[in-house]
Amino acid sequence: MPMAYTDTQHTHKRLAGLTGVALVHIALAMGLAAGLTIKYTQAPPEPRLKGTNVKFEIPPPPPVEEDIPEPTPASDTADTTPSVPDTIIDLAHNADFDVDLDLLPIPHVPRVDTSVLERGNLRLPDPPPTFTPRDPIPRNGPRGWLSNADYPRRALQRGWEGDLTYALAVGKDGKVDDCRVISSTGHDILDSTACDVITSKARFDPATDRTGAEVGGTYRGTVTWMIPED
Image (tube, rainbow, N blue to C red; front, side, top):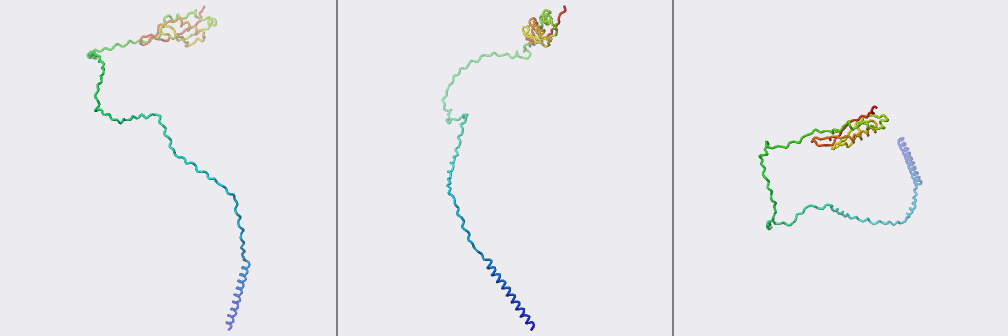
């Protein structure tokens, strides 16, 4: 019997526990229902957009450019290609014609005897003689070209002396065409006096070339200016 008591007591405790749990769930459900009340509020309507109508003008499409071929420039040179005529000339049926030609008479050429042209009989002309080229040769000097009388007075007074080397250009006629100082005495008056006197007094046999012909030439000489003793 004690066993049955124990089961009854245990059953009462189990019922009491289940009842407490159920009450707790009911209380929670009521609290949630009271605290989780959802209020729905409708949002105000959005304001309408205000604007101004703008009129857009669409430009007309651009004109379509037509591709016009450029004219070919005319060539500056004329076409020189010969053209063949279409007409065919039949030479077989042309009439015969005569041409009168005045022919000049052929002059008579005498026959040359070739026997005289044999190597042993042919005589060649003699070569011209050769000459040795020659420079101009003085005819009257050169010692007689200058004298003490030609000494410049101013050079005598100042005691000027010196040696002069000169070159003369002699023409085909044997006369002096020009006098050039090669080496000066150091005094212009002595140089110019010597050239003037020699040009006026000197005479030459003209120079010759290899053929013996007279040609112009050059003569070179020296003069010593020295004051004469009393």
